[in-house]
Image (tube, rainbow, N blue to C red):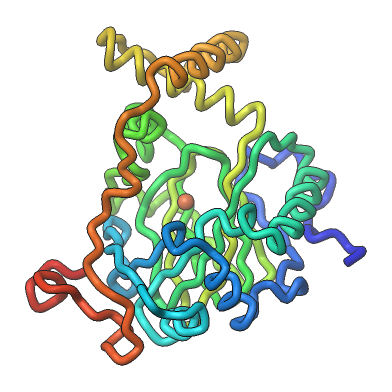
Length: 317
Ligand SMILES: [Fe+2]
């Protein structure tokens, strides 16, 4: 492929990078890596322990959470079929960096993105998201820079301002210190300042760091690539939040990360690096989700609830 993967960004857009919601276009579908057959092969090649399988209510409310499941014994092709027919979200985590065929493309994609935006990218990782009609992701925030490259189907991402009223400094600290995953308190009043971005195949969106967001799929199978990356600026910002999180917890300090002078940020970043080495966060909350169902192509929504779970016992999504 001689044309860049990224298009639709003009030099004038550089001033908006990281400050506003930025929309652009991409050519990921042309690689052939996102067809049903290619996705089935990707899942077969991917370690099952690194495959997220979950379900949730259709058109999930913003404060809804997802429910983890398993798909032992099912092939990649069966899982793609289950995502098409059922109420499922299937995601090979880090697929774009772990699988050599996808990594070859991802490296070029990120180089194109860096060139188009002027960003210096330090680290980058990305998951492939395969999800059914009307599935979604609840209101949350990611600590890293994040963006979504949409490949198949339609979806709407709701993006909220990265301000204290939407995502408090204490919430960000808890996420960076790994006390919490990425959940945030949600209030219906927040919708007034949310931007609803509709995504068609070939469209991508990049929002300012620490902007809370949620996603709702259209009435079709969705395939997207969810990218997270760091830049010198995002690393400095997170260093400040991390150190202030430690100060607040250990010394009872009341720091304000958003008010930290930029000149002090490198010192915070160095301190954060040292603290992470000296006292790594103890809990890995990511692995503690109880599996409540098995994927079953013959079950309603392809969800076979395990004993004690599901709508009949009032604990389903
Ligand atoms: Fe996210």
